[in-house]
Length: 502
Image: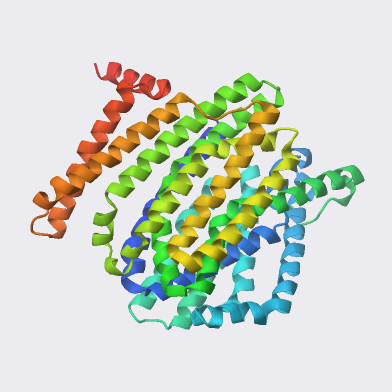
């Protein structure tokens, strides 16, 4: 097995291990030992740091991946590591300057509804710096084909470091001030661990090979970096929600939103792996101008993303009341069910149609992506500002769904008109019909069978009802998906499995 395959498998395992640990921490530690306001504080701080660090990167991470083959050699890779440290540092210093200038008015935004955030606002530059270089070091490891350890640090290490802080604070062993510093310190520790791992790999140098950086190469890197800096907001739309919520509703409701966000975020987990597999294939077809193949791949990927994400969303939704019943202090967070519905649908849309973004970015029309990203960002900000005041946390979720809907409507229309690429197929219509029937069956089950099974209203009877409902309805949907041949590829896998068992 090659190094790419080994690292991909190990990286995926690290992702899923992190999801499992995050599930336990989020639903059975955070909700038990932290108040809604404290959960909201950690969420807003991390989201702000991730958004600011993404901008401060100045497109460095994408540039490292894009241009590393030009720098690669057996000794020090012409100092690309040193260059990857210098550019984000310039971006961070620019951010720090802007932060100092606008510190007071920005802090004042949170002072009224989220005084706890205002108290710890001064920590944002430090947390941004840690998040920035944790990511930069991780990207440097990835181009050296060593992603497993940085993935473990990000997905597992940070969560375990945070868990220690949660438990120490929850048991009253440290104060809130110490807890917040420990929470920020977990990202500092992750940054240091990634740096130590990089140094252990060798082939990196802090010295930049300036002679290798010709004027033409510098111009090419600058153009690409500028483009990627502008596009960074597209991947950070969900981060904008919590920042708006902290200002408009306070940290307590932001905490309720956070728990709902974690639930809905599970819908996108398969997309991280499936997308990584499909992108190189689509990129190759676009490079060869094989638009027939691009159409075939786009429809196939979109169909399978839609099918998988809808099934996961369905399983989450039919078990959502039971999940909230088992969460410690679940009554305080059950108001987030509407958020799960709207955000879950937004993530279904994003998972299913993001292949269209890849097609555009790999084509010669990639500068047009700036226009669509501008629409996405502007609509997300405008809709958050308006809808949060109308619907609260549900308004933030609705803003995400509507802004993604508008973005993909414009993007897919452009792809169809200019490139003749369409992501839609009859299989997706079949999925819609099947899922509509599935949601209808869930309503009937809840109306007729749930009252009988959960007559005594204990956690045990709720669990029995959830397990039985999941097994019966999931089996019914699986049979229909197979018999109706929604996906020939899925049917082929099932047929091979059945033959193997015989």
